Length: 110
Image (cartoon, rainbow, N blue to C red; front, side, top):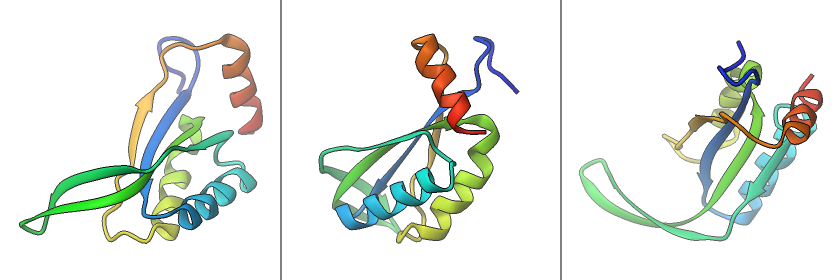
């Protein structure tokens, strides 16, 4: 179902522990046409509470551009290939963007 803006583009965020894991996941998502584009960002330090303890980890954030109709399979694919017990998977609606880019994204994800 398209958003109010008339497109169904979404941005999915996740973090991976290293470059190898991030590139492998990106390749899977692109080659299976679950994502039109994946950005693997610079390493960052993540701090969070896990099982009652303060944790600190170096991670690589990923920005995954796709469409709503691919979200469920994309989420399942991330879960299957992600090394974490409970990976961060956050979906953000893209309310606006360059129309030509959003059209390209929709066409790639047929």
